[in-house]
Length: 465
Image 1 (cartoon, rainbow, N blue to C red):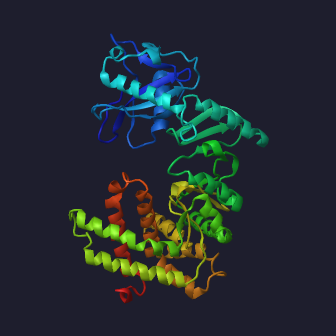
Image 2: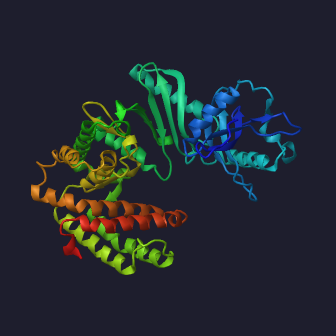
């Protein structure tokens, strides 16, 4: 087995490899007592995809990943992680030196190491809970893949598509699933979402009805799983394309989608899109900056970039004035996307399609353009001529709808407003889960420092001070 290195670090994972709907688990018989099979996979990469490949390569078994198992009890060390996987075909023979053991009858003294039985025990408890809450965790049940594959196969028939048998799983947990299935023609993607991103299901279906050319074609959906089946996005990703014209088409497609959504903001908000309308941002400005002030008092100073309480107060006033002026421009509220990663945008010569709408919002349209512009600048190193073309490709769709002076002013006000909108959304989301707030506190303060850095770049910025 490969040895971890600084250049290519590997993570060891102990596997609870099951079959027969969770009744049997694969164990090694090479020692006096059982041990669990183990693989090593690259750190900081997709866990499910790498585990599945490693199991097929090293054990000759095709599996589907289920979820990470976190043993209970005293500290068991962090050298190993545990992951449950299920054999795709229950009749698969075990490799040499391994056997299928009855999961129910295994005891602590069956294993060479206590930590391995701890994983087994935790997994068994999870199986007992699986039958009680299938609506919330549809992918905890070990046999879920068969049900999904059968549903995908049936959903493809009206399109003269059929599964070829090949698939690649991209993530795995009891509430989420992302699998690429190959067919007799183009591949299809099965995606299911759970908390906290359940909104993505309804938002994606709403956008499929509103502007089908701007997202991958939806073939079927299933509410019980919060899932949908879509054709693979055409063309190549924006991340892999260095052609400025490709980026310009993306900007134009984004504007077209937003124009099409002008009268549909309420429906998108009902579907679960974040609310980044200026009126709402103004309503949460005070509690957000109170959190920033409290955090500034509590966290120790670490760099010269830390804001003082006076600077926090001044920044709050500037953001308020900026939002109020933006509100006075009476721009349209449209659909937006806070996660416009180039890896989630695909396109051809004629159009671009946008994936992963978990961070969809309704608000001022130029916010989305600002998020996309930051990626453009990283790609093209602030080339002024290219940026002007990129900006015009986006603005062309708006020039007939927004007075030129208003559009020009909105371009200057949007960078700071968009940054506040993003930071406020991260903060508001963390409020619903107290465990999430402390880890995000320093990140939120770093966003506030970026907001302060944005102020001098605004036309009229001196007038706000």
